Length: 197
Image 1 (cartoon, rainbow, N blue to C red):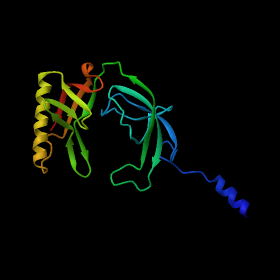
Image 2 (image 1 turned 180 degrees about the vertical axis):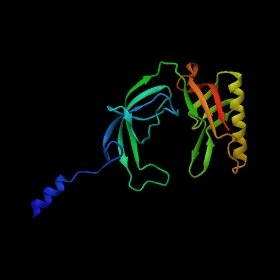
Image 3 (image 1 turned 45 degrees about the vertical axis):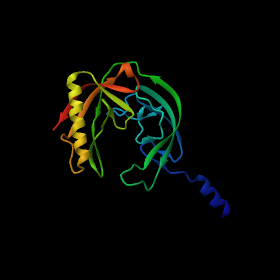
Image 4 (image 1 turned 120 degrees about the horizontal axis):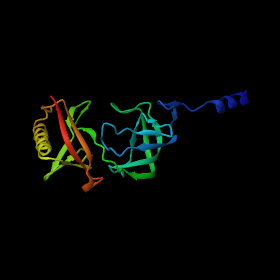
C-alpha cells in the first residue's frame, strides 16, 4: 500500500496555467519591445514568438528605444488582488539589449481607463517639459500645432486635478510618435495628436 501511494504521488504533475501551460515558478525567455507604453508594446514569449499573456513585473532598468531579451519567472496567484491578473512574470535578468535603429512611427494612448476610478489622462508637465506618465519619458512636440495640443491637454489635466468629479474632455487621445534622436531613450517626438470626442 505504501509503495502504491508513493508511486501515485510521484506521478502527480504540478498544475500548469495560462495560455502556455506554464508551471508556477517556471523560468522563461521573453522579448520586450522598444515601443515603451505604446499600443503595440506587447510582451512576447520566446522561442514561440507569441503574446506572453501576462505582464512583466520588476523590470525597472527598461529604457524606451531598446528591445530586450529577458529571463523571467512565471507566477500564478489563485486569489489575485481585485482588478489584477492571476498570471504574471517576475523579471530575473537581461540576456540581450539592442537599440532600435528604425524611424517607424507608432501610437500611444494618452487616456486610459482604470476600474475603479474611470478615465485618466497620462500626461504631466514639469517646467516647460511634458511627460508621459509614469514620468519616465518626455514628450517633445514636432511642430507648433502639436505643442498647442499638448498644452490644451495639460490644461484639462489641471482642471481634473482641481475637481476630481470632472472627467477628460475627450473619450480618447492618440499620439503618433517616433523615438526622438536628440534624446534617444528619454523622449518621444510627437508627430500628431488625434482627439476622439
